Image 1 (cartoon, rainbow, N blue to C red):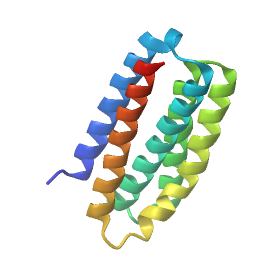
Image 2 (cartoon, rainbow, N blue to C red):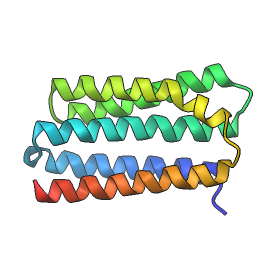
Image 3 (cartoon, rainbow, N blue to C red):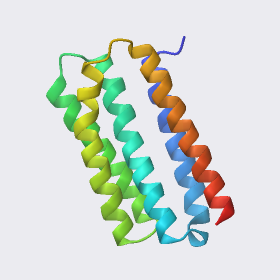
Image 4 (cartoon, rainbow, N blue to C red):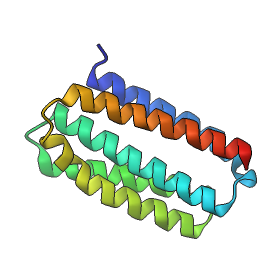
Length: 137
């Protein structure tokens, strides 16, 4: 069974690898696709970090909310800065909104293992769809 810290390490590794991949391909990507990429990456970073961290530290709700919001904002902003200013703002605001809501989702889970696998599966599916979209653009 994968531990929560294993998921965090895997997520960070995938984000860094995907950021490096995107920084090499950014000239081929239009601003609409760039905006979608920044929204997906900022939102998924905030969602994954909020759920995983609230399950790991259940009695630190306020701190986890702040941390997951900052992770979403920074990730969305960094991916948005690869493209243009509008994309930067879109990634930033989407990461902020999802980061504020994700610890709330994590606190009400009845079957946290299943939800973690589901959300990570959606994250991998989003990565694959984004990579296919980049290849087709």
